[in-house]
Image 1 (tube, rainbow, N blue to C red):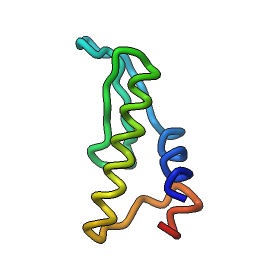
Image 2 (image 1 turned 90 degrees about the vertical axis):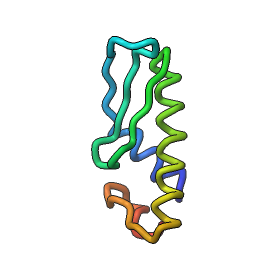
Image 3 (image 1 turned 120 degrees about the vertical axis):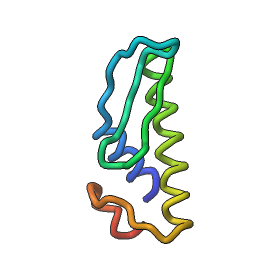
Image 4 (image 1 turned 180 degrees about the vertical axis):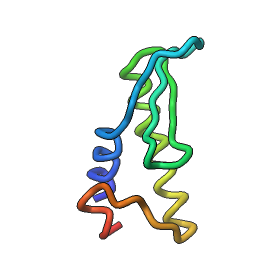
Length: 76
């Protein structure tokens, strides 16, 4: 179920090109503080996936809820 939540979050990600050494920037606005960069769009997406995974673990360890944009969020 965790993988489905991560994939649902990635579907909501927004990407843009910024003036940086790693020009691809991605974020999921529903997940506070979740963003990543990369040298390519694919690298940015992989980095964002890792950030989402870590964000979920931290929230669950602290007893915080996850935004309910995925049908599996009620079970996590």
